[in-house]
Image (cartoon, rainbow, N blue to C red):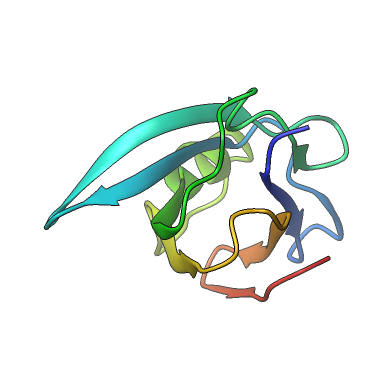
Length: 112
């Protein structure tokens, strides 16, 4: 399992957000470098973002393709992309970043 994972729930439909594209990026100076990506499974989970790459301390960002996801649901949305930026201070730990989405809002927190 990847050292960084996510779980996306579609609160407007009351179910997991299956088929949502997620990109994992790492900050490099003032820019972001893609280090992995994946598609949420039937349970809305994506546990393979980094593969077997080693986690390093630094800035990371998950970029969720909400626009494409809601288009597949035939739903209008305000958010085309949802970026969640965070700092890794303890690279030996596992980081789980859940996302709750609806067409006009979202919420996140550090999971376990």
